[in-house]
Amino acid sequence: MLNIMNKETTMKAAFKREIRLDLIFKTIWKCKWRYILPLVLTFALTAGIMLSIPRYYQVRVMLAPEYSNGGGNMGGLSGVAGMLGVNLGGMNSSDAIAPQFYPDLIQSTDFLVPMMQVQVQTVDSTFKGRYVDYLTKKCEAPFWAKMMLKMKARFSKVEHFNADKNYRPNPFQLTKAEDKIVEGIAGSINCMVDKKTDVITITTTAQDPLVAAQLADTVMSKLQQFIIDYRTKKARIDLDHVTKLCDEAHRKYEAACKDYAKFVDTHQDLVLQEYRNEEEQLENEMQMQFNAYNSLKQQMVVAESKVQERIPAFTVLQNASVPVKHAGPKRMITVAAMLMLCFFVCTIYFLLKYNKEDVQPNETDETEVEETEAEESIADSENV
Picture 1 (spheres, one colour):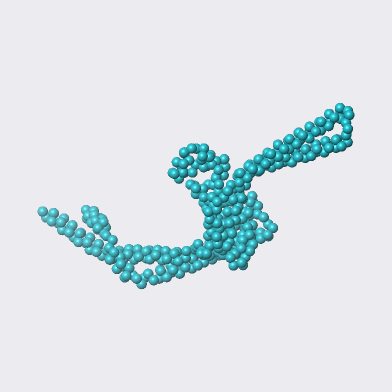
Picture 2 (cartoon, rainbow, N blue to C red):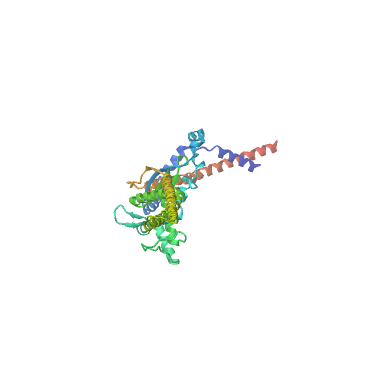
């Protein structure tokens, strides 16, 4: 009975506890000197870690490619969808690779491996060469990354990238070193596509501002070239086929012209009907070859116009520009955030510690008083 009563009184006391700002500030002021050591250690560790992380720069480019759609054939539905922020262009599009797939394309191995051979130059002109050489020779790394690399080199053989300028990596079979470089390039390139407007945003990151701008411009150019090659692939195949047929017809026409001219030169003032018939046959053959060549020539002109028609037009909303300020790391913000976190953690620890020390004696006194009152009530009931 006494235990049940003690539990009820303890629960009531716990529910009656309130947050008192005066006690919190009093505890903070009381323990003000104890904040110095954890805050100094937090500042030193955070500053050391953030200073070891090299600065990086970011460049963003934006472009909007021409998107073939059949929105006009859908009547007022496309207008209603436009007001609702829904793009119906892909519903009637004949393209298998829509703009939503461009981020996956940029992250593909076939797109990233050729980026190793891109020529870049640092803003201070201390380096000029391939992008892969810039990554392996000029880029800095945090101290823990260097330590891990040294420890790994002690226990296992580290594979190095082939630095030969004439060497070309095989995207089908990459080595471990090449795969690491490709992962690094993939991490420095980010592509996003707005689903409503199909605007493509490409963001590149590098430790040098000029390299970041050159990388962004190269990625944008390669993406444009890929879109052009893809959109015009079928038309170019048709053009090549018609061009081959036209060249063959032209050769046949020239051969027929030579045969006719040779026969006419050697058979002047014809009398026999046999020679006249042969001359007419050669002339008809020459005319047939000319008609076939002329028809194919017209088809070739139409095929060339189709290729030109399929080439998309790109509207560059934001070109690549060399950044003036670095994008990160945010050293001051990170240090300030860690100091605030350390302050809050220490404050909570001090409040719990000193509140427990202050509450425990009072709680024991209250429980003793309650126990004596309970014993007296039991004794009075027995006497009655």
